[in-house]
Figure: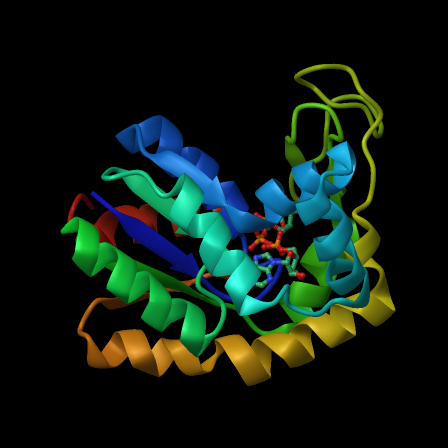
Length: 211
Ligand code: ADP
Ligand code: AMP
C-alpha cells in the first residue's frame, strides 16, 4: 500500500505517519525530516534548503523532485510533505508511471487555522531521535525531556509565530490546489484532523478500508 498524507503544517501528518508505520509496516518518507537532517549535517542540500525553510517558503521544485527520485521506494510507503506544489505532483506522477507504482490513497487532514496555530505553537521535538510531542495534547513524562532518549526537547525554528503565518499563506497558495487535483483522480480521502490522535487514527483506518 502506498499513501500520500496531505494537509496544512501542524495538521498531524507526522504523528499519524508514525502510527501507520507501526500498523502497516510502511516506510515513512518525510521531506521535512530529510531536509532538517541535511541542515543539521550542513550538507550542500541542507545549506541551500535552510534559506527557504527559515523564511517559511518552499524549497524549489527541482531540488525536491530530485530528492524524492533518490529516496522513493518501489512499494509500501507513506509520503508526508510531498508533493506540495502542482509541478511536484506532476513530476511524481511521471516518476510513478515509469516505475509502475500506484498510489492507493491521498489522505487529506482537514484542520482549521485556530487548531493549526495551537498545534504548532505547542509542538516540541527531540533533536536527537525525532520524536514529536505537544505541551498540552501529548506532553513528555518529564518536563521538556524526550521520553525515548532523555534529550532536551526543542521548538522548531519555523514554528515561531511569524514563520507559521508565512507557511500557512504558502500552503493556501501552492499546496491547497492539490486537493482538487487528487479529488479529480478519485483517490482523495478526507479525515477530520481536529479530532484526537486516536480518533484521527480510526478515521484513517476506516478510509483505508480497515475500520
Ligand atoms: P505535521 O506533521 O502535519 O506538521 P505533527 O504530526 O507534527 O503535524 O503535529 C503537530 C503538533 O500537533 C504536534 O505537537 C503533535 O503532537 C500535535 N498533534 C498531532 N495530532 C494531534 C491531534 N489529533 N490532536 C492534538 N494534537 C495533535
Ligand atoms: P514540514 O516538516 O513538512 O513542515 O516541512 C518543513 C519545511 O521544509 C517546509 O516549510 C519547506 O520549507 C520545506 N519542505 C518540506 N517538504 C517540501 C516540499 N515537498 N517542497 C518544498 N519544500 C518543502
